[in-house]
Structure formats: C-alpha cells, structure tokens
Image 1: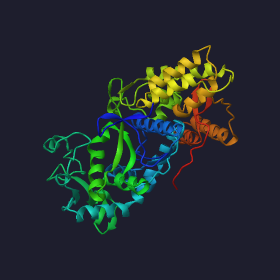
Image 2: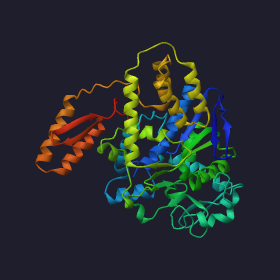
Image 3: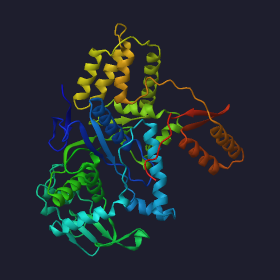
Image 4: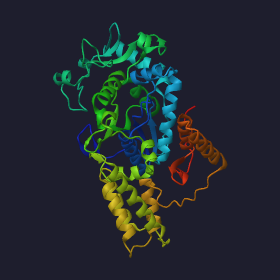
Length: 455
C-alpha cells in the first residue's frame, strides 16, 4: 500500500508522488511571534511533524520550511505597547516557540526564515504583479486585484460573488473600497511607529500573505510538494498565497495542500475571554508532560476536530505513562515484527490515521505471543515521537540548583516578579519547578537543550 494524503485542493485522497525522487519539499505556516503559541497552534505543528517523520520513515529526505511572522499588525502593536524594538519584542516569543517545539519532540525544520529578512524578495514579487496588471496602488498601499486572477477561490471553493461576505472589511489587510482585494504592501502611517522599509514600492511594510509566497518558493522552488497548516488558514491566507504566487511566477504553486482541523476546548472555540486558552507553559505549570499533549493529538485524526479538556489531557498522560511502564518490562526478543509493522504502515498510509496507528501499538505491547516488540516499537515511535524507549535519570546540574535557590529566596521575600523570571529561566534550561508543601520539586521537561536555529 502506498501513502495517500487528503488534498484540500482536490477534496480527495491522492497517492503521494514527490516532484523529485526520494526528496520532499514542504512548507508549514509558522507562528506569528507576538505571544506564546497555544494548543491550537501546536496541533498544526505536531500534525506537520508527524507527516515529516512518516515521510522519513518511508525513506524520503524532507526539506521543511517553517516561517516566522515577525512583522504584522499584532507584532507592531505589541512592540509599541511594551516600548521595545520589533526585534527585541518578537525574539522573546520566537525563542519560546523553539523551546515549545523541543518539549513536544517536533523535529527541527531545515530553515526558519523570518519575514523581516526577506523584504527584498517580497518587493520583487510585488513589482512583477504590478507589471503584469494583477496589482494596483491606492493612497494607503498596493493591493492584489482578485478579479484578474482566474479561478480565485479554487482552494476554499468560494465564488467571487460570495467573497464580500467573507472578506474582513475592517481589517487593514483589505482594500476599503474593494474589500475583496488584499494588501501586498502597506504604505507607512504613524501607527507603525519606527517599523518601515524604504523600497522602490515606497516607504512601508509588507502585507501578511506575501511573505509565505516568497519564502516558500525561494527555498523550495515552484511548484513544491506539500503545504500544511490549520483549516483556519485555507481562506483567506492560503487562497491568497496561491493567487499571488501563480500570478507572479506563471506556475502551479503547490501539489498537495494538507490541513488539520480545529482544537475545541470544552466544546467551544478557544478564547482568553472564556478562560479556556492554554499555552504549553500553562500545561507544564499544571504538571503535565508536553508529550501527553502530543499523545492527545494522536488520538484524533488530523482532519477531525479534537475537543480538549483537562480531563482528556489527564487521560492521555495516564495512557502514556501506562504504555511506557508496559514497554519498560519488555525484553529485547528478536527482529522487527513484520505483521504489526505492516498494520501500522497500513494505518499511516491511509492519510496518516494516527488513532488506528495507536491501536496497533497498544495491540502489539499487549500481545504476549508477539516477538520483536522493542525493535517494532522503536520504528513506530520514530513517527509518533513519544520517547517510548527513553529511560530518564534526572541529574540536576549546579547551575539549575543555583537558580532554584535564588527563586526560593525571592519567594521568601515575596519578590514574585523575580520568582517568575527565574521560573522562565529554568524552563528555558529544560526544567519545570513545582512548589509543594515540602518545598520546590524539579522535573526534567526535555532531554535536549533547544538549539535556536536563528541568530
């Protein structure tokens, strides 16, 4: 059985065929670094990671790009509010993003390009679109004329006459007079503070959508194999990526569009106002292992909505502990079990059916007659990324103990601000501190320090 993936563009499962033999080019829409990533963001990143790991399992080399959106309305407003430079403000959350990736066993991407470091390429694409008549200037920016692009709406299956209902007219990303047209370049206004670039297009900054077109094709070429992201990005973001990329370069943009569904929280959309908003740090402070969240994601097919509750995460954490405990009692007993491995591959080849794959794994570890368990578990876990065979022995180094002691002193002195900063410093080193009636307890969150891929 060959790998079949559900392609949002065609609305059906298709046999995956790479453009280049044994090599896959893949782009994942990354984080807008104005705040910590939440559990909805990380479902998309784990789903993308599972796909990468399984492609590698099948023998492909994968070049994965994850962009860093470090200039947009939210990042600019956040930096101005905190009276920090855009770089200083966004690097804090960028660093946190890499730490969260490590805690979730998400494999490092090949490259993490920043939007602010690709302005030249964005300008070049916008100039092409102006020259070809797909873009036009107004007093406040340069916009893409979607009427000029044939088949606009083909990804989202939206017709032009319906777009007025869908366009976010109040957003700065859209032309106020032609609300279906989206911004490529926004001319400077005072609300942007000191964030601007002087270019051939004029003084200003890029719109949101243009960065992904530029950075994906720069590093992967056009067309490339796979583009991933959450269903919330299908329209307008991915639709607009297709339009500007194919209009500018006169080539198909992407072969396979893979989208994961929402994470609901207690049956509702996640929102800070509802008090159901969770970051990875929130869960760790509640004494959850981040890999329990990864396990939770695996329990639902990536194209199905998941309903997150604290109770469901407790169940996932208990299941993961139980699974590891059972595996710890298994003795190495020969070669890979071909029967169970084939069942696992059949599940994953069917559009990455991780719930079925988990069932196969549990059946294997419980099967008293099965041989080759450990080698088979190792291969399955190379995709699932749950550290099932890892035996942890926590040795707390001196520098960590020093930070813990400093935090205890700060807490005794009721210097809560300093205590919180020291907690963050410990987290960055891979340790979680839990305050108990018997004093501070240290837990190892991950076994490798996050290597920041960007300076």
